[in-house]
Length: 378
Image (cartoon, rainbow, N blue to C red; front, top):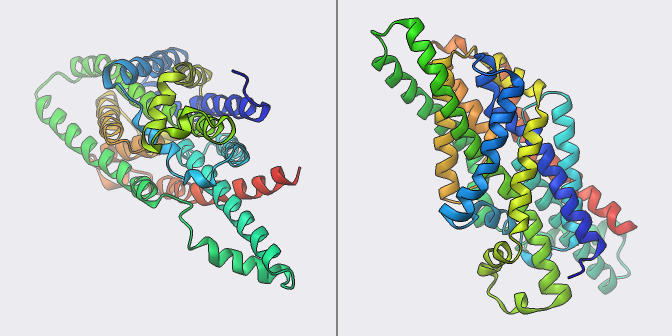
């Protein structure tokens, strides 16, 4: 089957984004294990990459489906999806990811991608409305037509809020859940080891941290690699339904994505591989922020933070809710800091991160909307 050039470009860009996500976000899973000196940075990225890729086999052959990818593909009403929309969303996501990576800001690749997808779709709908109103009312000026188009946009079901609202809520819920679980785990460990020899206990925690970081890397792979699959899936499904008009068009929309992952099993495979390769490239600036600037982390606390982050990611994967691994591990690290004292957390850094999280979706959406206008102009 020959794909159109734009679809091939979209798949390539999505995998590039996935790779960038690897060195941008996957640093989260190795930040504590590096800062506690359990592994060297090189050993840590290799360790994390192996478990990122291993997540493919868990999703495909144990869980048996890719729930998060399905959720991403359904954030936008399929009537407002085309290849130009997906292309513009990816360009915006890549641009924001690279910018935040350059400045060492642990923003969310997940929300960048979602924001780009939504922003481009909204601009596409606005463009269609403006064009229809301009044709129907040629006597109206530009701003009058634009005003009417904006009003009409608010009456349309472009964004599937039933899918998107839980994603927005978990911008705050995921770090809170991670923080709560890490506090509980830390307090339990402290209670269990309160009479142990400190040096012997630390050696045990360093061994345990290998397991906890592996679990977090599994959760990261399950969560983040699927997001790219969702975008590629939306593009390929659009191609089948609207261009080929083949058997995909006859399917219920709810089953199309699962059929896509079975028909194109290479897409999940290369998505997980790309994020693993990106992890091996490292993200040293963000490792420094996550591992030392928020709060100093000991091996005990590293075990708590990584285990709490992993549990949170497994829970959200079960319910098919895409979350930010950055937000999750940040909340977990804050949680272990709070078990010492409130002042152990560097709140100035935390507040800066919070602003980056809040602004990610709207900025990505705005950039994607502008990118869409540029794309259709050519």
